[in-house]
Length: 121
Image 1: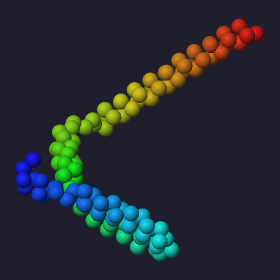
Image 2 (image 1 turned 90 degrees about the vertical axis):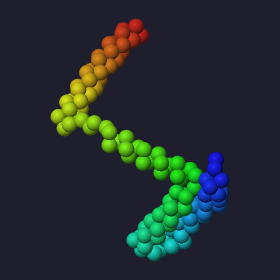
Image 3 (image 1 turned 45 degrees about the horizontal axis):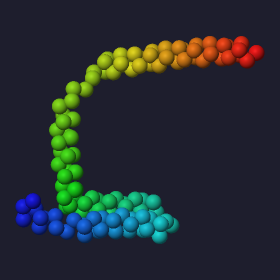
Image 4 (image 1 turned 180 degrees about the horizontal axis):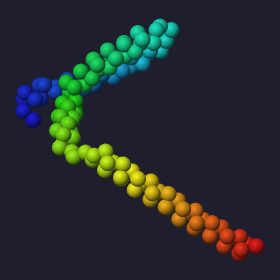
């Protein structure tokens, strides 16, 4: 690892501690201020979450996660999504096969139940 990268991610443990404290403050604040308006508590939690995410993104793992998310976004753009008709056809095939398998299993269960009843008496 280069010196610049070592300096940039030098305080990762401290940053993760700050993130944990922010999350704990959000949970504790939500409990302590439970009698306050839900709107105010949600706004406070969102602000704390944004700050915690911003701090977490400054760590080495946070930067790696951001790189992964950008790569995933580029890969999603390359996906060829099925058309509406293809989706309906695939869904119909799945439903037909599920019903067919249910009928086969029902028939097998009925046959085995009948055979066991004949053997047991």
